[in-house]
Image (cartoon, rainbow, N blue to C red):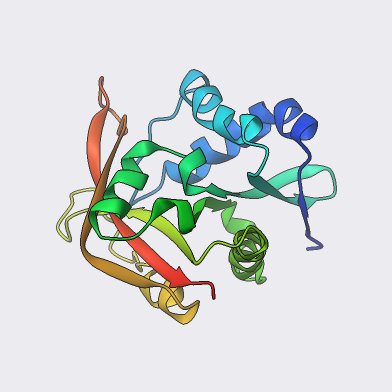
Length: 196
């Protein structure tokens, strides 16, 4: 499978919102996110990346088909829920680059795309003079009833990439779980990597 990763220009982000939304909905439906996605929520969430002149949206393509995406932005251009948790941990959000989602269809995994997503976003953060890169990951209990028997957390991969969990730091972010009628807040761990 031949895959190409490239940054999307603002106009292309806007024109591919439906593709990006469909990709996020498909990938985040799996454990641990269990996201019951909808297009309206996605359009609102992704709007931040079309409005921030310093944001980065990477697309992974198989030919013309979008099979993966990753986002990043200066922390102050992203959700306040994450910036507040970072500030509470004693880290200046103004010095932080935020790595948003990394989503890739299962059949395209295992080819180094995930690593490239992180490397390219970190490079964008360095180019803006940011001192650290941060991302958030949902926290689910080990005995969650929808946890697959063969589920493998990504913590060891993130650690290999140089990230460490910020102990005691936690954000909360709402979305609707599969089968739920309403959104509920989820606890999110923060993972940090120095960029200098």
